[in-house]
Length: 426
Length: 162
Image (tube, rainbow over all chains, first blue to last red; front, side):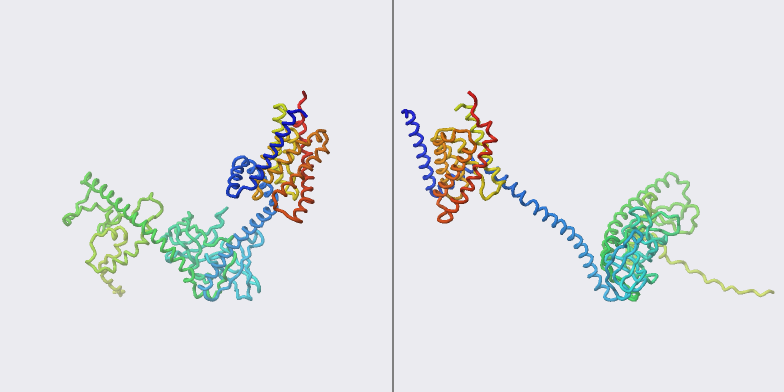
């Protein structure tokens, strides 16, 4: 072996011994020195490799657990779907549980099975029958309101029509009992098929949108006070002497799962307090909203009255010769304009200040002053209870809210009619 | 050794190191192939024994950094395996896959023996089972993987014609 070869061999041995010595030295290092060294190597040289290893292990773990995770996800999705339906059913049953104690007696809980075919779309099969005390023409209700009426009763089951049925009719009224009508299926097309319409409302009875409509109890089938729907808007109909309103039903047929059949005897005693709490809360809310609207309208009416007064004054100043001579009036009073043709000379004339809200402009929408009149009605009773002479003579509220104050003016005594005495022929 | 050949060997070495950290976790076997040993042996037969010892020492230090205990054990074991492989390379110069496979088997088994002895974590029967059963199995898998690597990387590892 040459000298260079021997040197290289020795050098290799030295390197091996050095590496072994270093290895044992590192092996013998205390932990507090060894760990930072290992950590430094992991965070610098080995960092990309460790990242690769972590990704590979995550991928392998994902592949290993793919099947089990898929099964778990499917199970969770199924359970979530069931939980949703269970929650809806739970809510319905809680509503029934709350409804039962308020009815106290004469009610029969039942499961409602939807019609089995398209022809029975508007009927419900109830899981109770005559054995449970169900009788024909019994009202079927849900916690939300009226559902329908039992039509056919078997010993263990019964069939009821629900409100979209073409034969369904119920006598209804608004919450205050001012407007009455008959509610029936709207028989429209598309989504409007599942709306109700309230027909036969007297023309003088205007109902504001959002008003809750209740069964009136007339007819003897449905007790008074069951929510039927909420007014959406008035329908244009050929009849000019009655009004028809479109109602949003309180009960959606697709949500009917559990219902209560009210015994006719129980219905005859009334169920007004069963849904009264909810309806009274709605009524209070509506009154508050209407009061705010009334204030706004009152301010608008005052502005309109001032504008009309200004127009009247300017017209009177421009054409003084057309104004009929008026008798002398008190100091400070403006002369009243001439009565329009057709008005009796002795009939009292209402100036715009006196009734600003009674004659709204025709382009302000259909009859906006009805709600105002309803909400302002308490003022009437207040005025009646105030002793005469204690009220300021020209309060704005009284003038603007009661266009029919002339009714309170005492009429002049009518002289008694002379009895007609048949005259005997001479 | 020319620069191009050294570059190719370095590339093959790095690919095996990356394989060790990416492919091995996918396999998840009880006896896993040790691509680091294959990389060390492939490099060691192409360098001097002292250089192979240094390469093995550095490779072992990196491997030990991922261990909780026995820091330095892999460095010592790889240093000796690299030196031995480089010293015995004359016997395995023949382009024979079976001989190279046996070379990988011996290298991996020798590494395990030295590592387990230096680490001193296992004793008695456990050490005997590990050295007599699992280490040979792991060495066999490593030899198989090394042969496959040689087949795949033959164009890369062959000497350039002069």
